[in-house]
Amino acid sequence: MKKISDMMNKLFDSYSPLDVPVVHRATLYGCALIGGTAVQFLARQYGVKERRSRSVNDLDFITPASNPLTRHFNDWLVRSHFREIKAGASEYMWNYENPHAGVEVDVLISHDPQLPSQIIKVAQILVWHPVNLFVSKVQRMTTFNTRADTDKADLNTLYDILEQRNELPLLETALSHLDLSDAEIAQVNEWIKE
Image (tube, rainbow, N blue to C red):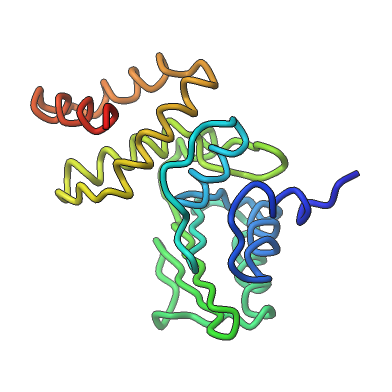
């Protein structure tokens, strides 16, 4: 059987010796991969075009506030020489870095009761469902006016992933619950055509 570290090196760009162990431990402790690393991981898993590189030093995760294993992930990070970037973990976010390896780990603590049903396992790695990754990008881009090129690239990659998974109807349903204006819907359609 293949080791998870062997699989991961091929499935997302690794920039430090801690990237793979952090993702493995996060999965073990119920924290799902999100952000650019999740998009790249899913793109490689489903064989779709990657439209951008992942951030060099950033690993992002999401976990339910009710997850009893989160403190074990925290303990593991501390034992692995990570330190808090901002003093005191909040009830919504933990931010850690290992300056020697040049890695930052952000853990979003979600109080959404639906989150556990939105986490899936792909190739033995927990990841936030691609529909939720897509919706999150749309919310950020339409709310904060951050129409960054990386977000547009991620939307297009996620759209292709959802097409591969035959989940475009699921995406349509999720987007219909966002209460987007006609102008915002037109903008999202423009973004995914680029």
